[in-house]
Length: 236
Length: 70
Image (cartoon, rainbow over all chains, first blue to last red; front, top):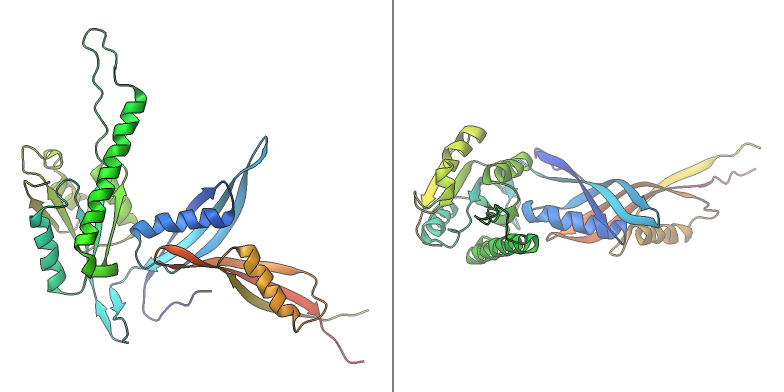
């Protein structure tokens, strides 16, 4: 039921979503999640719908959806038939998202020509467990660890929202997500479903930055064979 | 007795559900077609705007008896 436009390349991904109430609700959940990282989502095709059944009957409604999004770089200018080529940038940042150095670089890239940005905030590191020196037992209760983890995620979401607000004038050209897993894994997930021309990594200064200690910029460059630009700043 | 059937495809849409989308298509079809018995769901999809589902669509295959002049 969808019409492909001439000359465009679309990538198709499948996703599975569930809901306790209906297939429609499951589809809404799946689409809302996919839309966090894929701008320009227009339609989704229902590939399969099934039920998860327990002793008391139906427990979950499950849908498998196929969503597609444009992979090539040609974009139609709103209100005109003219197309432009965009450059796509993947920004990886967390604590330094508010830094002026990063904001300046984004402004420079945006001013250089039509561009799209996707901000990846990797999940903050899990709290380190501290054992009681006398017994060797971990004293931090599990609920507290989980709470800290959720707090870290909430803070990351907040920084992401602030960043997107700061570049509100870029409109739909900026998207973002908090990615689970370590930065390299989170980046791999993003690059599996989309493509970019450059990666921008924003870190704290060497010595303080965990990402620089992990050699993240070089590892990204080697792993994905894309130009990587490092931005270092004290703020955050 | 030989019979001939017409087969048509219809797409119904609804902001509520795929069921409602199918019902809308059947309601519309029954205004002009007689003797509708079974509608087969051929395809279901949805339309997204601003990251939200705005429309559920159901494509139906409807068959009805071809009325032959005799």
